[in-house]
Length: 205
Image 1 (spheres, rainbow, N blue to C red):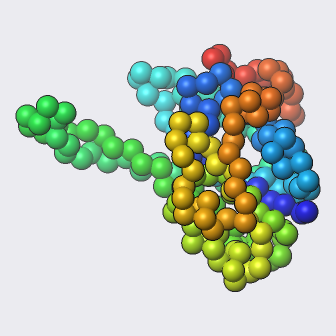
Image 2 (image 1 turned 90 degrees about the vertical axis):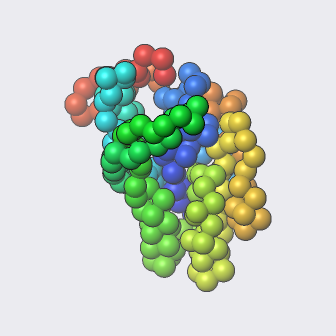
Image 3 (image 1 turned 45 degrees about the vertical axis):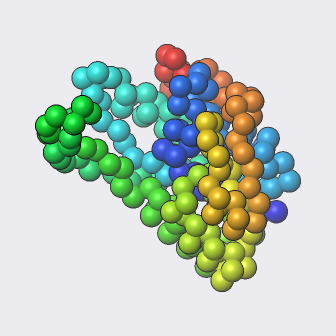
């Protein structure tokens, strides 16, 4: 079955690989394990570029190295959103007063994913779409793709420490959980080569 994959990058990171040594993930390999009967036409990865912080100056560099690794996959397309930061006044944990904090929110990934899912469906680019996310905000575009466009839409749920979204599970054509053993078995080689040369996975990944 001709299939396109739509990955919510941050939802996947926090749900499946944060705090593990398996961040150097090859999504093509993961799809071969979890979707063996599917012919994967294209993989979309939706994310935003993070900023380095004083507490983690290499954060951006690690992400850029991973995006470079993803670009070695011939059917991968990376779609970038953005981060918005603003100062907001928040209460202290002890309830005694308020303090100004910098609040950073990722913008665009879920909207970009939904738009691409629907656009590809209207173009008849896939027989089956697979959404890699546990975000119930994606319910409506999944419903439209199934009921109005006549497509099959599955969900691969990154749920390391929680349950899958009930609304996604109830409406998707199928749902599979992304288990740690599948992630561990789907890692890139520690060293990769592209047109720019040879590079290695970040320390701790």
